[in-house]
Image (tube, rainbow, N blue to C red):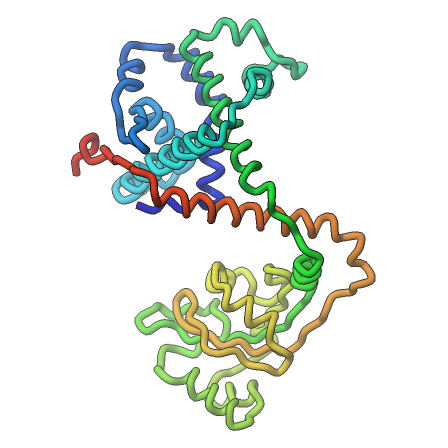
Length: 349
């Protein structure tokens, strides 16, 4: 079971309350004994504490709404994946609530009241909390709204408690400023994976003949100019084959067509920004094949403007470090949780 706490997962955990869905459900369907039955049936447990079928049903419906178009086309593998994803989100949320309780974290009644009052569908046209509307809600739904907001606040407080010690050094700020403001001109030689369809949009596609990248690298090692070495192996190069990078975003060249190959591959960025002009990277495995980076130009940032941008840079670095720190803390602690999954009893394949 994959219980890695990524950014998207955290968004689901901390965004459990979707007021439109809940309030619409209240007015059009109301509370029923069937719904009460859902709350008493366990879909699984975390450290002996149950996750109700009612919670699971609501979380799964939120995911269904997000993937509505995909579900219209694919009702097999995606449905199975969403079922497990809904369960994982609830496991993660319950575990975090258990940890918040362990740390003695308990949001105050005033905090919960303000959080409930912030729900858009419970506000008047002039933006004030609609007390009358809230009081007319069935007691069960009022309790559920309050509980959901309590849980959301508890998880937020827990995260702040865990990451409170995170700090950003001056060297980290300088490194991030340098990275975001350095512009690099890079040539990519791409060799598609054997069996992949030819894609004219790929940058310098050189076919799937084995060893051509190795031949280019050998020529470069013997002292040939990188561009000449590529041409000597039959690879035509022109100006459309160049990329300009600024930060993590390809700024010019065939950025749209090649972005998917570069996405999520730290080796590409590491080599693009660490190599000196005229240098060549090792062969890097990327989506759909292999690539070699030839760094042609590198323009370093203007440090005279650094001070005015540092507050923004600091927030970027701090947010990333806090997110990474909390994710690591979560990954270490969830390993010891006792998780019981009853999904197979509900959805028999």
